[in-house]
Amino acid sequence: MLVLELGPAFPAVAGPREGRHSMGEAIATATGETTPAELGRTLMHEHLVIGWPGWESHTTAARTSPEDEFAICVDRIAELQDLGYSTLLDPCPNDLGRDVELAARVGQQTRFQIIVATGLYFEALGGAPYWKFRAGFDDDVAEQMAEMFIRELTVGVGETGIRAGVIKVATGQGAVTEHERSVLRAAAMASIETGAPITTHTDEGQLGDEQQRLLTEFGVPAHRIVIGHSCGTDDHDYHMGLARGGSYLGFDRFGIDVLYPDEKRVASLVRAVEAGAGDRIVVSHDSVWCWKGQPFPEAMVPHLSKVFDPTHFDRVILPQLREAGLTEAQLAELTVDNPRRFFEGAPLPVLSPALS
Image 1 (tube, rainbow, N blue to C red):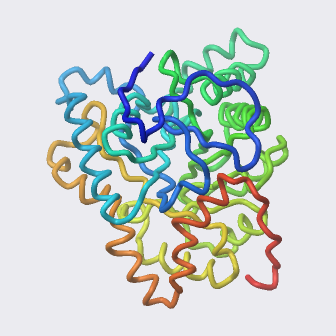
Image 2 (tube, rainbow, N blue to C red):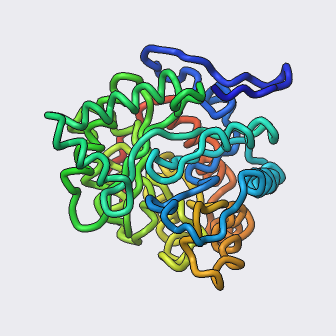
Image 3 (cartoon, rainbow, N blue to C red):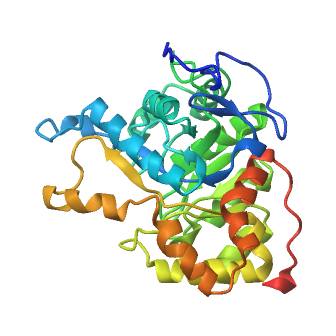
């Protein structure tokens, strides 16, 4: 069990707690609980650390020590605090190097709210081999996944007592695989049981509509879902279809131009806001601050901190959005109002097709 020595003004790590979470109730963080009203400025998709499955097999790779990871993350949080942020969501799933104890240490040191996730990544790059093997012995492996998600949301991750505050799911490209469908169904079961919201990963702006369809068919209210990386395409009809479907859209890869240019992300965001979807867009960078193993060639390593920069939205993108005509109230929705509403669980208003 992780034990943190916290000051009297800062909440202790939450212990076991069972039962459903009702709308607007406390949100689990790595260092205790918060409420939607206390989130403040929030980035909805950043990563303290990522470890691709199999990183341990790269035995000759240079490795960052736990203390170095801690120092890097503390420095990054300080940069965000200077910009007025008080919360971030780290939606790292269970099979991608998630380290909830690192998040707790960083949160304790910085007095910053870090919401961690339970969930599983998409088949091609996640821990699918384990679960596909397990599926050979279980009639319904999704039930086993759901049981794990529920425990991590209500009791804690392993023996740490640190509870997840959101469920993470993901799909790859082309079509939702059978494994991914099982994860989506498991996430839906856990969300319905606990009331926890869901955030997703999509590749290149694909399959968000299918994620929305499946999760809602499995019983999850659309407004409890963020369709992540929706900014991987500038297809306005795709964006507005998700928005009219009642879910939040993650414009959450700002700064990673190698995947998709910010110029198109900005134009798409502005167009969606002008079409009436400004109340259902959240922003972030999908930045990664530490890597397990050495997944990038050594020559690239010095440049990673520039690509994965969680201050990029404020420094570079906000001025562009202002220049494009968005008001301060519309900009505040992206980082304050919409994250708060998402975690409150209030249904989104119906979006008229005529607005798009």
